[in-house]
Figure 1 (cartoon, one colour):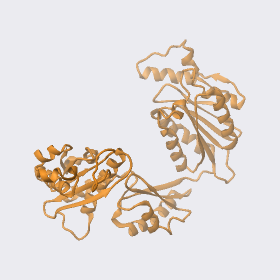
Figure 2 (cartoon, helix red, strand yellow):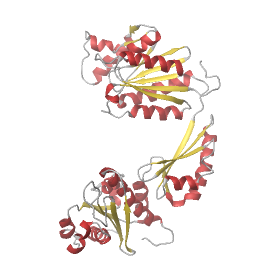
Figure 3 (tube, one colour):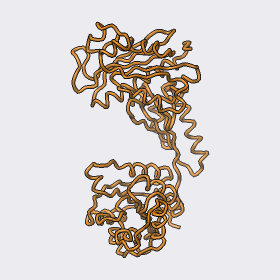
Figure 4 (cartoon, helix red, strand yellow):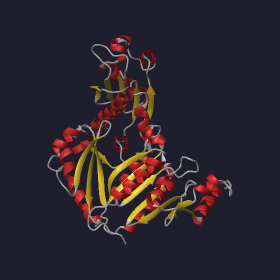
Length: 429
């Protein structure tokens, strides 16, 4: 069984396809493979994108195989003339391609599952069943193109299809077991991501400066669309030991940052808000202008949100703010509907219309046009109305594209609501 001799295994990822180079599709495969290799203790040395060009792909295979212990290539396994991945790998290894009956039978079964018949005489179809001499095929439970792999001089090379829906299950069910079986010195990495809101990346880094210098576990903050993701990772052959190390750091982070840590891993801010609303028996209504429905979309994306979400509306045009929400014309037409009174009025009106405990609202200029001397593009007002506590407003100015301003404004409005719900010492019932 190959072993890396005590050093860290090095892996390279080859993403194959001219459409990737042209920016026509986003390479999510490389991100996914990198993340999963990290989890099992393999360091990704490089990620290389190569078009459907035989000469360049041949050179890329030669370079990657010469540098790394593991090479994982995605894409270029289809039936068309520009699918040359297997042929280029064979050339890089100085080997031929052999027709594999098991791969062909796997393709036949894939066609049958789809109610189709595989053309036994199709040269383009048979092309996909050729594997590198001395290699093995990897079944594709979702698509038709088999994957393949080969071990050469203690190095593992895997070829997987490009479509993520096909690549991911093959990677989980076959690639990871192959890697862990082939290399005995892997030490898995376990990690937890803490989600932080209301603080910037630099503020988090300053508050946790001494923790960021650790080696095991490691702690690193990352900015992420109006919030910060803090990754805590520990490496150990003993899972319980690694999780214990992570737990100790997590407790200290939560102690220092308090309610700014709203959740972990895949937990979203709207999930945290939903739990707080449901636990306290509170209900919510939302009126959006600048955010165009993003807040409602996020709130209703949480399963069970019907227990606490009563109503949402996009009151975009100034006249709708007057006719439907009942705002005074003089307030609405001042500063192009972007001012404190509009935000507070929208929040209170939608709360009353829905008979909800809380009303949340946004108004602002997303750009690129619009804005005034006092309220430039990027200016956003958020209003929050509570039947007992009254109405509060907050102003923020965001920069960037129209989409970015909308995304950040929605996140900030949700933080206003979250902060209101968790603020200690206040009766929010």
